[in-house]
Length: 327
Image (cartoon, rainbow, N blue to C red; front, side):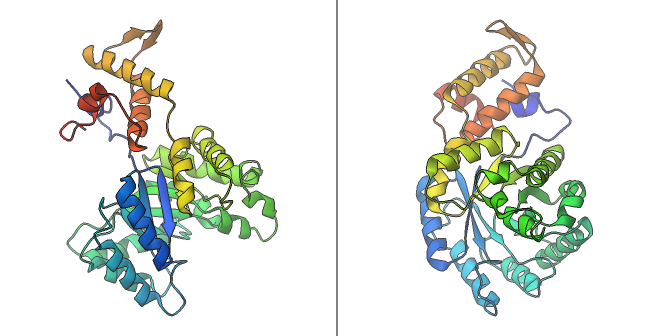
């Protein structure tokens, strides 16, 4: 039977799917702990080893060497470890690229922070390609956190090497030099201030419009898991984000839960997709609703997200849609 990716996206690439949690860490102890956690929990979240905020000034070369050692360790069990390098115009940028290109184990992706323009991104892409030479470099993720980056977010999202756009809340707010209050950095305030809402929507719309994954910013409040889960749920269901940053191990599970479709949604998606597959993807009637390729694409995306978040699925759904030779 024809798989949804083949039947429903003829002439276009299926939407990209990345783990819904991007866990950031830059201190050696926390980097090791995060890799061990990922090795045990499974590839339902990425680990991003942070050079920009993790490296002490003057110790950038030592830090990137440590990052390469950690990527090569047995704890990198799922090959879902990326690296945030310094900004494109930083003196350490090309050194970090050269070191990563020579590493014994490749990064799953590179995060480029503080991208100001499409022209600057083109320079960054050229530097990455030069460092990797004839080999294929990792995909790029871009952090939009400045006025310039937001102005050119459509052109940045259109860059073929880019797989994801992230929103950098803290730098974005501080870049307004007091015009946006500190309350806009809080869990509730970031969803209500008009300029921050506008930035979030521009980034998610640009990413989704170009087939890239929008990734939501951090929540700095660490202790209230229920409020964190509510914020993550808003990021997905109201603002269109398909991925979110974590900065503490305790944030990973609440974000996973928030980005997981409900059991009722998953059950309906499976029912519709199985019936549609039996009908060779022709229109069907299900629970007195008409469904066709448009709703099939929606239900496939929902089911794919449920699988990506580690939700248990019935054997019939796993065998039809997620077996190794049938994805």
